[in-house]
Length: 175
Image 1 (cartoon, one colour):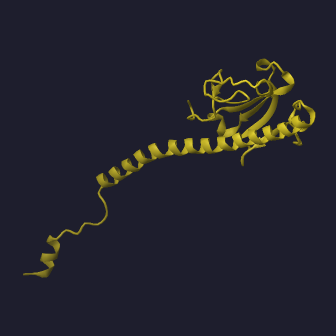
Image 2 (cartoon, rainbow, N blue to C red):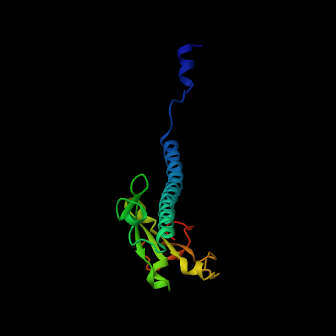
Image 3 (cartoon, rainbow, N blue to C red):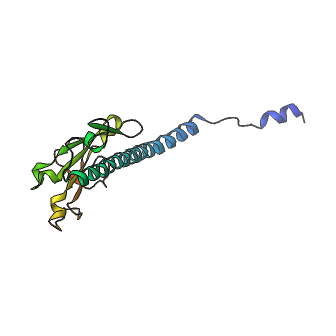
């Protein structure tokens, strides 16, 4: 038998067929379609926590100012900031401002709202609000909102495109 003839009958496969490559690409595309939105929601939630932290820090400063004057300052400068608005997050994803909250308070000097206005890519998540109402605390009120939290501090979220604030900072982006 001729050795040359014997070698030519054995087929040695090298590389992948077009079908195999297309199947692998389809699997990668399906995994990406699942993973990318999940990762984006995770980023929004993480960035929201930076906005929440900024609101809580501003509220802490307001409480310190309130202890000295028995009323809240009219802007964040009165709370020790250098400007009337404060940017939060590594990429300035929220701008925090102080607004009077006279609509929901009987004691307007003891009621304020901190608004964290979403900026840039965080706009998809919406704005955050922290309302501080000392009249509820001073009256020893036990009134609760729909989320069951004391009305002395009310945490709200305004989803993008919505006109109504939703109680709680714990929510799914886009809801």
